[in-house]
Amino acid sequence: MCLSGCDVGTPLGAADVEQPEGWADELAMAEALDLDPDPHVVEIELEARITPLEIVSGKPTPVWTYNGTLPGPLIRAKVGDRIVVRFRNSLPEPTSIHWHGMRLPNDMDGVPGLTQPPIEPGSEFVYDFVARDAGTFWYHPHIHSAAQVGWGLYGALVVEDPADPEVFGDDLVLVLSDMALDEDGQFLPEDTGGEFGDLFGREGNILLVNGKVRPRLKVRQGKQQRWRVINAARARYYTLRLPEHTFVKLGGDNGLAERSVETSRIVLVPGERADLVFTPSDPPGTSRWLQWIPTERGFGSVFNRPRENMLEIVTVDEDPVIPASIPTELREIERIDVADAKALTLDLTIHNETIGEKREVVMGINGIPYWNSKPLEARIGETQVWTIVNDTAFAHPFHLHGYFFQVLDDTRVLEWKDTVDVPAESSLKIAVRFDERPGMWMYHCHILDHADSGMMGHLWVAAEGETHPPHVELIH
Ligand code: C2O
Ligand code: CU
Ligand code: CU
Image (tube, rainbow, N blue to C red):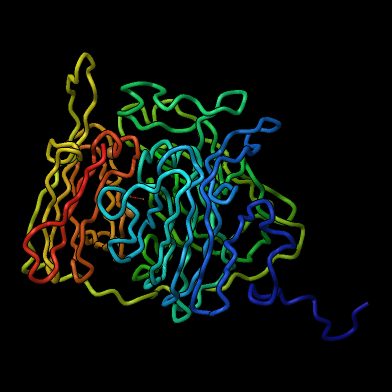
């Protein structure tokens, strides 16, 4: 019995308790082993190889992996660290690694034909660059990309800045993707769906979170988690919804946004990332599903398609805690001054061509597929505004290599981006400053079936005094 002043339990604050034991065990990803003792150098070995993994229970799938895991190992670094990746290709065909979103020197960008030769089976290549920006990045091949990514070649790269404001929650990286498998766990043919497959982009029938089918995450009511979510699927858009919950979005592709915003849905187009805080609010001892819901990206993408369960959120049977408040002002971002910007228009196009006997869907930019294109030009120090026009019936996620851009749209929270959705029959403007790092850079649609069908282009950022573009080979 309690006679005086007994403490009936002031609920604990979120900072006072840990996540539930084994909270993210089912989502654990392999972490890259750092071979260099220097705290400012992250040196790792990566090998691309086919590894049988059980995706659908009991049936091994010959997954294309980095170091035998799906996704490939998670790489963590701090701003200013040097990252050295000793890469070996043990696949039956050429590959490369592109570091999606990283502002690195051109010869480290991993684009065969533009920045390096394809890495042939049995050969090696060393990627060596400095992580200069905080953010959630990822890596994947840049040749035969739709197939290689679809078969499992992708991994996460998280760069932290110790100077960023503290945002509550433990860090969990969620790599979203899908795979197209038959009942025996074998990959469906690469050309499934023929022309329509190219047009729509091939989505897998198995949804994966960190390489797992419908894994479980344990949470405690009120105890926040910070999620870094990456869409690594070759074509699928993700709209994420957790009934009865909202998320606080902190940023996306390239670190924190100017301010945080509360939202009930997170939309991620292929290649895009979101950085968010999730505050579990369900009572102890319950569970519910984080759902994939269809996103409007053109004819038939929403009509009659069911929602799908992706991740089970299990609220453990422990006392709730009081959530910490999340800061609104996160970062100062200077708006790119576009007063003297050079203006360009890029029209994303789809047409039919008869090649030999076959009618083929050819995608391109301004009507020209990648393999016939001439480079856009920019000079070091120049600012450009690109109007990206999409008159097609499909949405396209537009991605630029090597530089961050800002979307010129006052209704959006200001943030740095490298991938942005251009919905069907719409257009948007982006501003980009080519401040340094000359070379040949890519831009393309990140529905990789579209990219492989020609919806890609290249851009020559000329160094001071450079008058001729470097010789490149546009691989078809
Ligand atoms: Cu993830 Cu060329 O892109
Ligand atoms: Cu990229
Ligand atoms: Cu596209």
